[in-house]
Amino acid sequence: MEQVKIGRIVLGVNATNCYFVYREGQPDVWLFDPADEGEKIYEKLTEKGFKVAAIILTHGHFDHIGGLRALKEKSGAEVYACEDERDLLEDPDVNLSAMFGRSVSVKADHFFKDEEELEIAGVKARIIATPGHTAGSCCFYFEEAGFLVCGDTLFEESTGRTDFPTGSMPQLVDSIRNKLFTLPDNTLVFPGHGGSTTIEHEKKYNPLVGEMAY
Image (tube, rainbow, N blue to C red; front, side):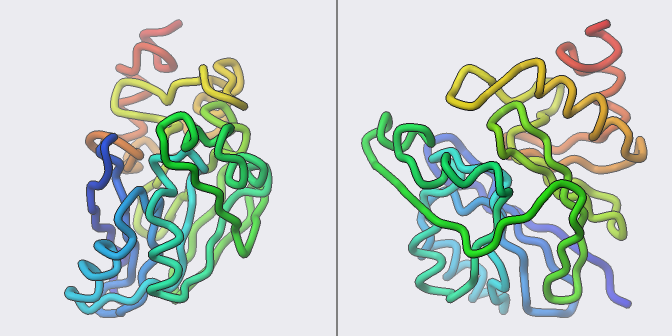
């Protein structure tokens, strides 16, 4: 069987990582966090011979959903999100889009729960609910490929901020230490902003949640 791969498009004023995950040799992709310019995402993927099979949200902040409506219209793909993120997705004040002058309200077609397994286009991932950055933040562990798409929960030697609506630093620390840090050390971590890292590196060197923080 061909390998599961991941690609990245960086979009928007906050340089959000918009990932696409697919099985090598297959056209269908999971598209994570369409931050902005949904038409551009669609065109770039189409040029590469890809088709959006599903739009997946790690959480509902404005800089992760700005291009969702246009991408959904172009691709016809359905939207997936954590059940605890429903209110944030739909409320422009809570998802911060109103604050930044472009009110966005979106609805998911499917909601999932912690520890569910999601399978789309022959690719599987385990849902890991990681409240803290937002109440409904979640990560996606692709065990076959050995990588994690984690939104704004965990960054390279940092974490997501918790001073926005539904955020909680104690919850975030608990989510990272007791859920993400139980994954294999060599797991590649792909965050919502910035560069990639590994679980092992963050355990050792993250000043907020790693060994250095104890």
